Image 1 (cartoon, rainbow, N blue to C red):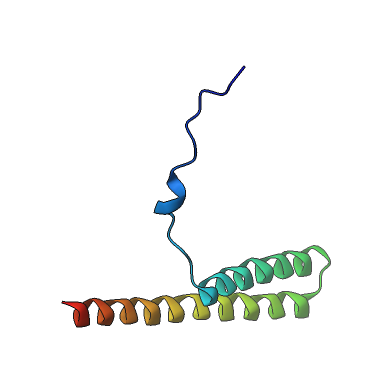
Image 2: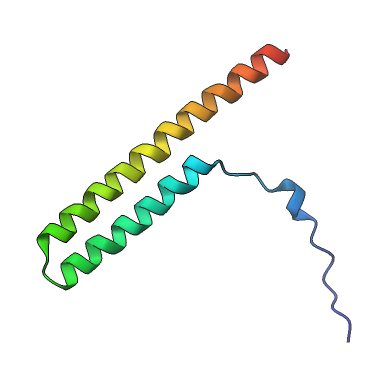
Length: 80
């Protein structure tokens, strides 16, 4: 029986995410896993290290988001 679904058409509406944003999210996830493992195994130094990784990922994500947003606004001003 053929599927009643239409072909995927939402791909062209997909917004591309820049590399630094992906790295920031990945660092936040990795740091959260390290913090969890440090708490599970009672390793406070591991938890502190994971917390530092989370903070670095958070900073990288928001700094690059702000920078890329300003670049995009400047491009749109030059075009108009």
